[in-house]
Length: 86
Image (tube, rainbow, N blue to C red; front, top):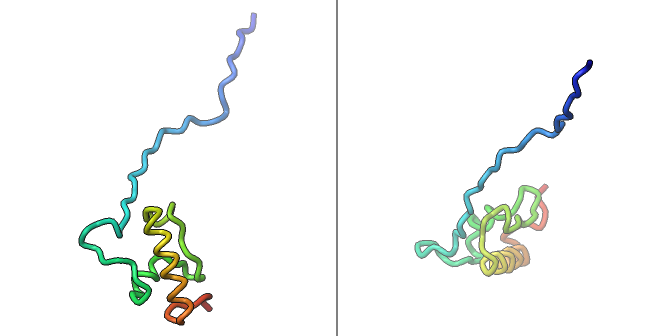
């Protein structure tokens, strides 16, 4: 008499991964404010194609992300940062 086979799940079990929460760089006391004249800092938050990086990727808090996007737009407007990279 054949034995009944149990169906096994075809999906592999995933181990639970925990991510370390990124802390806002501008909330620390030793960091300067977000400024449109500080182009080197602003370039860290812009992709090589000229797009602004999201909060989820950079780890910046919401108030500082809004300030950061405002300062990037100012720097673009007065030609310190390019709108598009070629």
